[in-house]
Image (cartoon, rainbow, N blue to C red; front, side):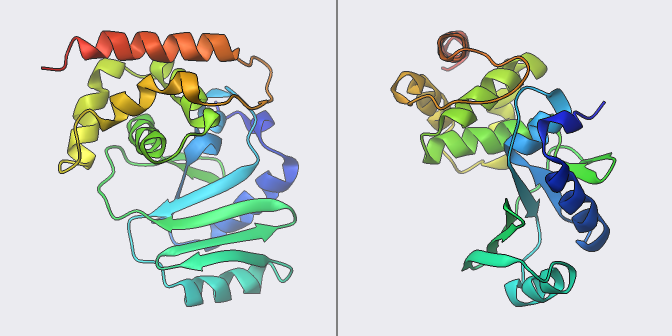
Length: 206
């Protein structure tokens, strides 16, 4: 079951149009993808990824033909951000193999749980945003966290194998932000869950 109540009607409308026009290599990931799969919190943006190179000039032309009032807010190699009717959307090239085939759910092509885990672990290695830790606390209930290290190694074989554990251990220094949803975990619960997870997983690190 997909949890459409975690996103706005405008996001649903835009996603439906994008699903019909974006190449099938694009998939939705990030907190919104997890919210749609689990209903753990509300989300306000759409993050699309593709394993292929993004020709931003062609992508902008495609989007302008669909959404005349679109505003482009950032552009770089293989990266494009935009705003459509107040909805922030990103398109990012991610040239790594997926662990799972994206799931087709209505008007969404959603990254699988294992890929959501690895992408969120990569996120906490590069930034201190509470929502990433919150999402990982949810993913710890949806997946076997004892497998996270193996998934990480398959996707990032050249990276520090415990960098993500170090990042998770810093959860106590991350400032919480208000999140909305029907069953929001408290900051204390998220912190306790993440620290317990790190403690348990450290037993498997040689």
